[in-house]
Amino acid sequence: MSDYVYDLMKKHHSVRQFKDKALSDETVQKLVEAGQSASTSSYLQTYSIIGVDDPEIKKQLKEVSGQPYVVDNGYLFVFVLDYYRHNLINENVDFDMQTSFESAEGLLVGAIDVALVSENVALAAEDMSYGIVYLGSLRNDVARVKEILDLPEYAFPLFGMAVGEPADDENGAPKPRLPFEHVFHKNVYNSNAKEQREAIQKYDEEISEYYKERTNGKRQETWSQQVAGFLSGKTRLDMLEELNKSGLMKK
Image (tube, rainbow, N blue to C red; front, side):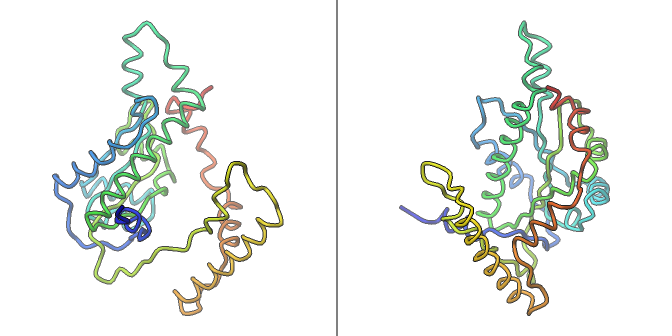
């Protein structure tokens, strides 16, 4: 059995510097079709993908994101949780589906579908020697993104993805992940706090050393420090309100 796909996945890292070379229409279609081949819950296919190559639209999205690679890339995808087409079906059948796609379960189904699609796109792009970076920063102003992309009710922008040929001076590398033993629980969850804390401490030491080497000592923070800094910040507290405005998460 070949380890090709495994090795490709293990090489993944976010690329934030791209050559000024646009993806062809053929490549874009292949990436989207690869995404569509992902598993989808109950064949609902609760997603849409917005392809953005218009410089003006990219510029407007960059104002939301604040990140330069929203503009400076080979192509920009925006992944959308989409029940709009399901609502159209709902208008012409004798069943009431609205309760389902306005529910918390409907939100989870849609978000999982989108995540699976996007990972297929990412893997296909990396197999073509492109680099990718996810853009959760598009949720900084969901209402503005919906306006820019003209999204209808029941369509919600979850994140973007910049794709392109990595710049010649791009020097990113895979970050060490949590140890296998710390994330894989056999048969039942291992909630032994002592073992968990010891594993976290060892991982913190590894990550601190990783940053120290990558930055010549300028950065030495641990994983725990990163987690604490991010999760203690009050970010995007309007998300439930924005979901409700899109017709989602009402039940």
